[in-house]
Image (tube, rainbow over all chains, first blue to last red; front, side, top):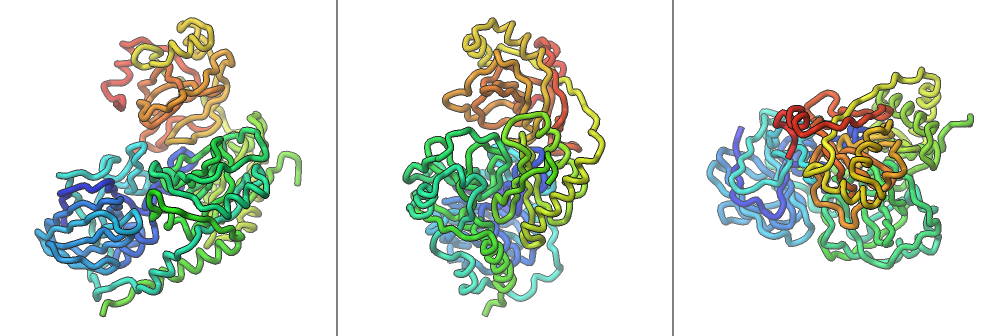
Length: 315
Length: 233
């Protein structure tokens, strides 16, 4: 067991895992890592289970002091990490000695980084998960972002031996984070919008608004007009749903979304692209591409297989 | 397909929307309660989450474990079983409410909007026989049916950034209780000292869909006593 002391909390640093699924019927959203692929890879580098609790960093990283020996991995966005002033590699298992300080600056690309640690961070599980849900102050460390002076202990490691040093293959990484449009299937209320509006949605560039957060990615672009003026009766929604409020500016629901909503959904970002939502930057321009549901599932299968080939022994 | 059977639509690559109707109606609601109960009782290994609402159930499945068409078939089978199960017993839950004052900052506005005295708003709200349609929006938040139409008041133009836990509120034709502190745009008319959601309790939510709810006005002394100094800030 080791301890990590927070010297600087960064812009928004929270404890996250893969979220608490299975409680939506009580109105409890899953929360969890905004980029689950990066979290999984980081945990695998540390020899942890995929869902071990890690720190999710946002836009500006922070500084962390290690009070015992630790094995860590940094994944996701590049925060120009240094360990005691020397560049710390990303996407690789990294041994840290007691007393060393990890410093993370502003994200150079992407938005969220993950600091994974062997054994995971030990915070009490609520409804089966350590994930922080910020809006309602649930989970993680007292349901809030980390700040200067906090300390977190690590949990017991899953295996006795950390094994040989490992890293993520750059080729596989590039395939796990493809450039290009976010792929989406038709939403359950695509029929609320005419063909012309669907064309506008899939052919226009959309700008990520600065008000985007873990609840939703708010987009700016041409107003999406509805064919049917009727109100939608509140119904269940899941992460990735592209809902269109009255002003016609779409919102892609993200990991902390409410479990139900009353806006029609024109499209749904496919599960295999869910992690890419977590890396969208404020003011970034994005596009959507329509795909068939069968193709979406095939892409998810491909991604799962890719994850299993992503980690190799370091040279 | 028998009458009353739902229409099942693909909502995404990992979810099905089971539609019993497009209106708030007791028959649709009973169907939602039954199917939700059956799904949660059985919890097939492919099932991830169930999001019941007024007339629909969103069923999230693991697309790597089951194909959407097979999941829809399984949902139809569970519905056939659920439709034959006996009506679940009805629970009545009393919720004490301290109306007005610091606990109900919008009571005066609601009264003014409805052209009623504050006392009459309280009387009518507490006289209601409400039904929990479903829990949604935030943990344990009950969507209640049965609000006296005379009390309908539009939501705030600008939602509050933080509504205190326990706040009893009216939003349009609906009324509800915020079990945990969260942002919210409904008009707050009072507050209950009861903790309606506690993740460390089993079950974590005090209310369940299908429950009947009655609000009982209490005075400050009873509010403080019931809160036991434990109301969430």
